[in-house]
Every structure is written in structure tokens, then in C-alpha cells.
Amino acid sequence: MMRLKFRLDEIMKEHSVTGKQLAEDTGLRPQTISELRRDLRENIHKEHVIRLMNYFKEHRVEKWFEIVE
Image (tube, rainbow, N blue to C red; front, side, top):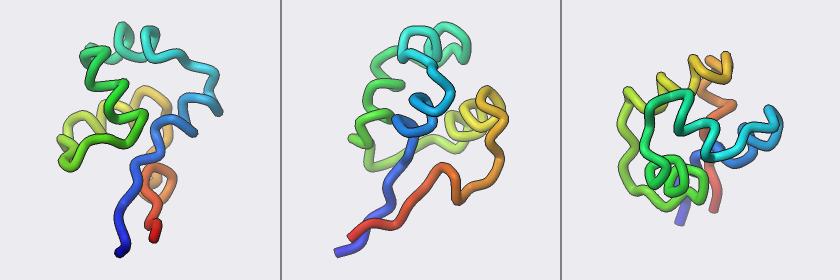
């Protein structure tokens, strides 16, 4: 079965950003960042994705999502 993977962890590593720093800078809850980073959420709010895209200046959707089997 295929699924959509959110690639926040990889992007954070590329930019050398910690979860605490990201939460403080974006206003997202640390728990939200942690769950997104570990790809534990079934649903992701569009506003969270847009906020993260703007923070990292990474606006290509294919950078953020990967289809995995």
C-alpha cells in the first residue's frame, strides 16, 4: 500500500534547524513539530505546510512530500 510521507525531518537537517527553534520561530507547538517530523500525523493542516514552506523558503511541493510503498 502506498502512502504520502511528509519530509520535515530531512528538511530540518538540511537547514540545521532544531525542533525547539522551529517551534519558536513558526509559532507551531513543539508537539506538532515533533509529530510532523516523525511523520505520525494522518492529517496535516494546509496552514502548517505553508508556514513551514515560507520559513524554509522551500516552496516546491515535491520537496515536502514523497510517495512511499
